[in-house]
Structure formats: structure tokens, C-alpha cells
Amino acid sequence: MDFKKILLAESDIPTHWYNILADMPNKPLPPLHPATKQPVGPQDLAPLFPMELIKQEVSTERYIEIPDQVRDIYRIWRPTPLIRATRLEKALKTPARIYYKYEGASPVGSHKPNTAVAQAYYNKQEKVKRLTTETGAGQWGSALAFACAQFGLKCEVYMVAISYKQKPYRKILMKAYGAKVYSSPSRRTQAGRNILAVDPKSTGSLGIAISEAIEVAAQDERTKYSLGSVLNHVLMHQTVIGQEALKQLEMAGDFPDIVIAPLGGGSNFAGTAFPFLRYHLEGSRKVRCIAVEPASCPKLTRGVFKYDFGDTAGYTPLLPMYTLGHNFKPAAIHAGGLRYHGASVICSQLLKDGLIEAVALQQLECFEAGVLFAQTEGIIPAPEATHAIAQVIREANRAREEGTKKTILFNLCGHGFLDMQAYGDYFAKKLTNHELTEEEVHAALPEIEALQPA
Image (cartoon, rainbow, N blue to C red; front, side, top):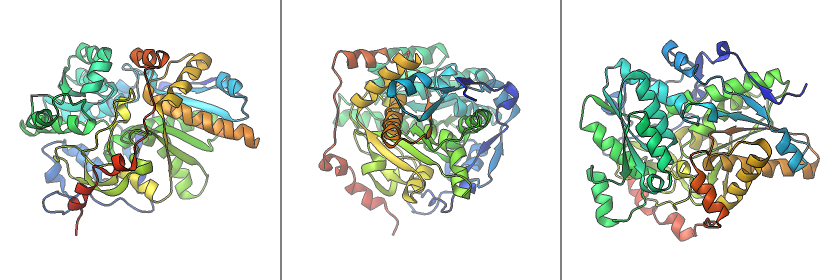
């Protein structure tokens, strides 16, 4: 039976998050203290995170129970629909079946509240008063601002300068939820002032914004830091996406041959792919999981697997990941959520082991795909989501050429209703492709060598 839209009941919201660490054949290397080069312990992370999230970060239990208060807030928008993209299939003349999980149904229009609500909850339980964070395109900042409003927490967001300029409505949305929003690099922190002293017109980066948010949190015992991607517990919280999709595809009598999602830090991709990748790891079903990154920030496809800082100023532990270097300066593309120098530890290990794939795409191809999707399926996707759609189109075209009836699932991680300037620039032909030279790719890498353990 063919379905156009597959809906679940509130009772179908997952009761547990899935932790892929339990099933990985090779566990990731531990994060290291930058001074001692020894594995970090809970005491090293306690100034920034509540203890329950620290426990989740290092847990190898397969499933972690979702608190009732978190699930109660999830009910505002979850379960999200799974939709068969029949009109896109027709336009592509492909025999492939294309499904997308629509996370734009959340209050802030993206998948980010899945972890923001959880993080705000655990911080509230430990009597934290304020959360600081970074945001690229503004989706994560909006999500944390929303989550903090649900639990009566103050929220302070450092927004990458180019996005602060390009995406004013994201900034307004955060303020509507009660958050304070600052352009990063700012003069509020030493990390920001250091950057501005060297480059007064800096367009910023996620690494810089992370440094600023961490610096503020570390100075106040009633303030904690909250991260929107990269860390293990963040990826785990997002697996509600894939778990719901599994159940919805079962209703359709289908299972994906290919799962596709964008990758900035890793939570979008992990949340969609990991519940399906579990079947591949246990050997019961084969599935290709493809992470899509921008060609202008290609850590997975052109970076190196090394220990590196998660932020520019070097405040975080050293993480074993594919990276372009914590001082890498990404181009000012509109997919601000994907402009991060490194990939999550878990995604990096899975790629190193050949268990997932990665591709890097140019933004013109992605916006072209986004426009086709809007014209066929009716939803204008966020610039980040267009990366997944562009790869879906590649795979659907390949299926047509090969005459194979593959099933493709992708995460439509957010709508683009607050990203109209990006589409305006595309239609005005102001956007360009950006191919990094080998020199640009490797420029920030030499200093990483000094960070490696003996």
C-alpha cells in the first residue's frame, strides 16, 4: 500500500533515546584534557554541564529513558509526519521511493528542540538559572530559547556574525522567547575581543561563538553551557527522529536502502540515521547512511582525523574527530548551521570505520534542489536541508539510470520560511560556489599536530 503521509499517535512518541555507542564495533577514543593529554573525567565537565548529561555523554547503555516532563513538551509537535515525496519522484522520473521526515513541524521550525528541551530539563533539575550557547543559522539558538522558556531559565545566545546579519528574523524569534542575542565575535568576552583585535570585520564562526558561550558559563556557578550538536548526548537525544521514522516505514511496509541527512556537527544526521544504522551494525539489514556537508566546509571529505579543540579559543577538551582545524575560517555561505570545522566524535569514528559515507556539495546545486522541492512538495526547505535534498536527487537519478527501485529516506530538518534572504540572493544570482584549494584546506592544520598525545 502506498502512503502519502504517515502519522503516528502521541502514544508513539519514543520512550527512550537510542545510544549507538552500545552497538559500535570500535568505540571512539576518549576526549583528552589539553594540558595533561589524559582522558577527561566528570569533574572536568562539571563546570559546564549538569551531571545527568555528563553521565549520558559517557554511557554505553543502548537505551536511555526519556523523562516524562520532556515527553510532555515533545507532544507540542511530536510525532512529526513522514511524507512520501511522490511529486518529487514524478518530476525526477525515478523508480525510487523517496520519504522525508518533516522536522519543520516543531515550534521553531527545525529538529533542534529535540535536544534543547532535554538539556533545559536536566539543567533545571540541578537548579541552574541560566544557559549560554552558540548558534550558526539561528535554529539552535531559537530551540534553546524556546526550551528555556518552558522551564523558566534565562538564555544567552552568541550568534555567528554573518548569520546575525543575514538572518534577522531568527534573532527576533530568539528574543520573542526571552533570550538575549549577541553577534559573535563580540566585545563581551575575552575570546571575542581577541578575534576582533586581529580581524575587526570577522564574519565569525561556530568555533568562535562556542568559545564565547563557554567563557561566560565558566565564570558563573549558576550558569551552564548548552551545545546544539557534536557531543554524544546531543546526538542521542535526536534519535527520536529515526525511531519514529522506523515505525512509520513499518506501517508503509518499507525500509530504506539509503538514509541521507545534512551534517554540520552531527546531530541532524545521527538522529535520522543511527536507529537505522543499528540494523546494519547487527547484520540484519543493509543500509547506506550518507552525511552531506558543504563543499566550503568539508571536514569529513577533506579534513584529517586528529585530536582537536571543539572551539576556536581552546576552552573545550580535545576531541578525536575529522577536522579542518579549530582556527579554520569557513566561507560565509547561507547554510550557517553547517559551517563548523569538525564533526562529532561518533560520526567521525563511524566514517573512519567505513560504516557511513560522506559527500560535499556546492551551494548552487543545493539551492537548485531546494527550489525544485518547493515547487513539487510545497515546503521551502532551510538552506541546511537543501544539502540532503540535493543528494537525494543524485541518488534518485542514479536509481533511474540503473533501473533500481531503491527506497530513500531523508531528514527535512527544518523549513526555510525565515531564510528568504538566502533564496532572494539565489534568484538574484548573488550566490556562488566556493571550492577550497588544498592550501586553504590545510592552512589551519599544522597547529593541530602540537595537540596530539605522544
